[in-house]
Length: 115
Image (cartoon, rainbow, N blue to C red; front, side, top):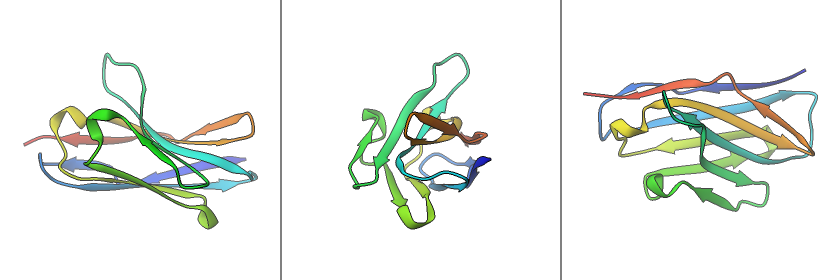
């Protein structure tokens, strides 16, 4: 059994901040990638930010300079600090973890940016 537990989503005004967290638990090991995807109604799921065990990161162009991904390898936990949020950031955000050839997904957490 593997579970990704997400927290931190919610409603925020434009320009505000949220911090998402995702902890992987259960019988898994050797996680080399953790990241965040998002999906808005009518859109495909897209990679927002990813990080590997060595610390290298990548970001969707539209969130560069606003979002920061980090990882605590000892806790198998990934964070997404989201600043200067915009209405177009509104989506369901999904945590993802990869070990070997297996990918695990969180249940999704709603982020809504609206005044």
